[in-house]
Amino acid sequence: MNLNQVTLPSTNVDKAVIFYTKLGLHLIVDASPRYVRFELPNGDSTLSIHKVDHIATENIPIIYFEDENLDALVEKLQEKGIEFSQLPKSETWLWREAHLEDPDGNKLILYKAGKNRKNPPWRIN
Image 1 (cartoon, helix red, strand yellow):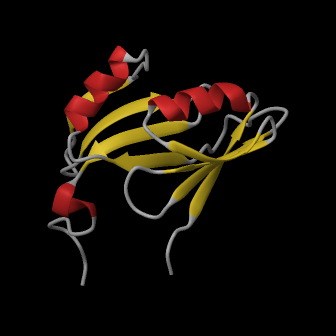
Image 2: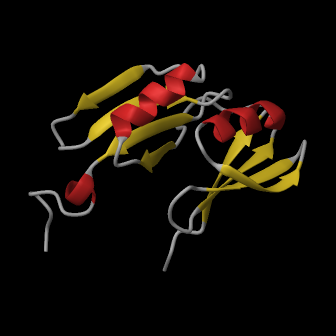
């Protein structure tokens, strides 16, 4: 099994396109203003955005994007006007993470985990 895509809600798909393009995703389907789909720079997964009237703020999923050059990526995104609620920080679970939200409040984490992504020291067999 392979994760094909994640779809996020948006009250303003045009704003979402600007935001995710700044993050480095490539727009591959444009059915604005109701739906868009992006390719990620690496791998086969895609991210879709679909139009909703409002977004429930409870139990929002968190989307993680891994990048080997996290600190440089965050600096580059800040230069493009992207704001972070947490700048890159080394966490106790051996990941380095930066936290942000898209224009609709969807929670995103940019991180670098390397081998610890799937094989942390506490992994069970």
